[in-house]
Length: 375
Image (cartoon, rainbow, N blue to C red; front, top):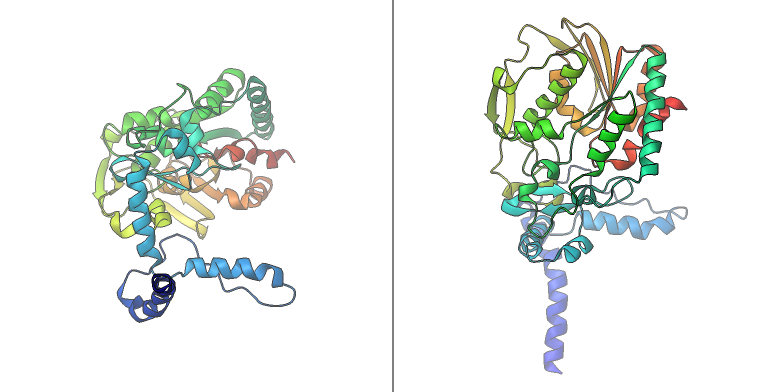
């Protein structure tokens, strides 16, 4: 009986002590929000919202649980050890937003209707012949729509990080196919349509022999990767490209860590580097005429090619802006979360070139985003 009471007391102490101690030491330990999002607000309590209050309170508390960052780091370190010894089936069953690879590399491996990058990597989600035909018909219609308005259309696809740095993926995760879903789709579009399509994987694999092209702790490519992507576009649209050998690539201390933020280990991930490109089109001056956070950017420059470009994009194009802005007279970037704004610009100020950028893992967007133009 005494042992039972001690267990009960110990249990309640484990629950109560963090709540009591945390307010006193909060200012002296790491309690910063690294998750690149705003924490859940305290729910509004009223008769009308009563059904949502329990879930709102849970979200509010989970975001502010005492010692959240410390417990998250401990959990991540444990997962680093456990993941390396899991079978592939166990790994897939327990997969969440972020996969911890070898040597600490992080990969964004969420699974859902919108994105499914781990199966993209495994190659076990290939399109059927019927689906490929549908994609070809769909993008041909989009291309015809633009051509009918005198606008050149380009579909640009940056690859998932694990396609470029697969050597750091967990040892238990192995490719099951030689062809990926996006490789299959872009090859089919090139063979069966008139669409200008660029899948940037091969160029990035070549560039990584000289410099890193993706961040170690982030889901995105770095400035070098973005620069390589822009050169693929200019090679297509202007028949010219600037190789990395003709610019200066400088190492910087600034680098992305969005995946580390999700895991709560930003302060532990400090051995990566960022890069900046110097000497690119020195004679061209590009200025921002208008911007709206990360959702909208409008550039104007004295580039030799004075055509107007409209880019509808996700977060991968954000690091392309400074380079692409130097290639054309006007370049406007519209985030796909406000795609209606792109449609308004198409009606009000039609560009000469329309670029649709969709990162490989966003499989649903690949099959639907351009459709708003045909509505």
